[in-house]
Amino acid sequence: MPRAALDRLAARLRTPTLALALALAAAWLYAVASAPNDAVQGPIQKILYVHVPVAFAAYLGFLVTAIGGALYLWRGDEQYDRLGISAAEVGVLFCTLVIVTGPIWARGTWGKWWSWDPRLTVTLLLWFIYLAYLLIRSFTEGSERGARFAAVYGIAGLAAIPLNYFAIDLFGSRAIHPENLQRGSLGEGMGLPFGLGVIAAIAAFFHLLARRLEVEALRQADAAFAAGAAPIRAGSAR
Amino acid sequence: MNVFWAVLWKDLVSEWRSRDRVVSMLVFSALVVLVLQFALPADAGRRLQGGVAGLLWVAYVFAGVLGLNRAFALELENEALSGLALAPADRGFLFLGKAIANALLLGVVQAATALVFALFFDVSLAPVAPGFALVAALGALGISSMGTLFAALAVRTRQREVMLPLLLLPVLVPVLFGAVRATSGLLSDGTLQAAPLQLLAVTDAVYLIVSFVLFEFVLDE
Image (cartoon, rainbow over all chains, first blue to last red; front, side):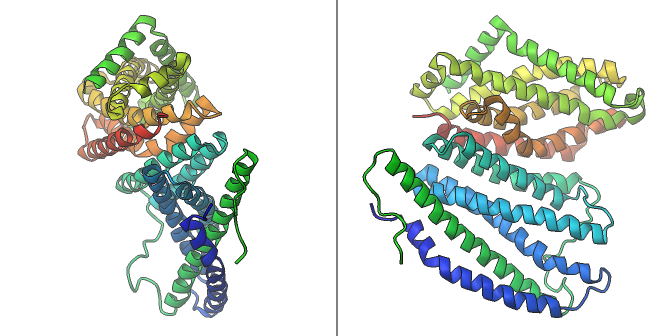
């Protein structure tokens, strides 16, 4: 059975993304070390260079999960389901990192571990939606029905996240999380480590995604073989 | 469209005949209000006024989840769900019939629970009843739309009833935000604020459309 297009892509991207992520991480470490301290917050502000890039990756992860789900429902091709579960697992990892680095930064600057600021609340909700997605998969034991259900939930969750954000933004008071999406909102000398961090995180995300896709393809091939299908050439070495 | 009316009628009539779902939802939500009453100081209702609105909606969400679980548990018996799936009709309208039936049943429970709540927490809902009815209806619709979709999904996973709240609650946050803000405004100064209502209306519309489209994929072929 020929390998699916996504699996071939994953195999091709695995090494380049790793190389990119490692190279960027090295450059990023240097840039972070030499970046100026924030005038108000001091050195703790440098958590920004970890916190924001992994946040981008966490949200990207959910977008990919939902897209994989939608493609799976539309086409019925298992490779899209593999994309969905892989993106969800990698995404929840990055989301956990956001929720861990955030409070560390918060404690250092705001003096408290948590706040019900819109962005924090929505990221926490995203984490719960990820978790529910993974629970659906585990409670349906990898069946076709589970793939379909997870795809449905991924799409529903994607619809819910912007609504959550608007809801909480409209009415949530205490918006103390910084809004830093405009050009020039970072100080001088902070743009480079920030940019490097974002690209490094996204490269790391795609690397982990490619790895996870390969693992999932192998797992499904193994399950199909155990169920009595013809032997499948899976994961041939490049 | 006939499917919609048929399913709606079927659900309401079967519920009327046995009344077990509504009764259990009612008793449960009354108990939740009772427990919440113990969670706060004795005069919380009088002192906080609008601040206790959230508690009412907690009771509504719990009752809603209970009712939604039961809605599809019934369909699982005797393969009724497969029967529904085989019906030569647009599954979206099938979903709509079930969702509206669930919303109506939740509405009945909401009305009764509001009375209990007003009694226990010593807040006055009577002067703002029409506005509150609107907020409650919009909230029930939001809970029932995604709730019906996820209930159909959850009831066929391994954890069944436990799955539904895990799936539903993160997604219900916009509905709760709008509903609690609107109710809070009604309780504290009797005004029906436009912004929470708009949020509720938009959320309900989005959720109904998304669930309508996705329900197709939740029923097996």
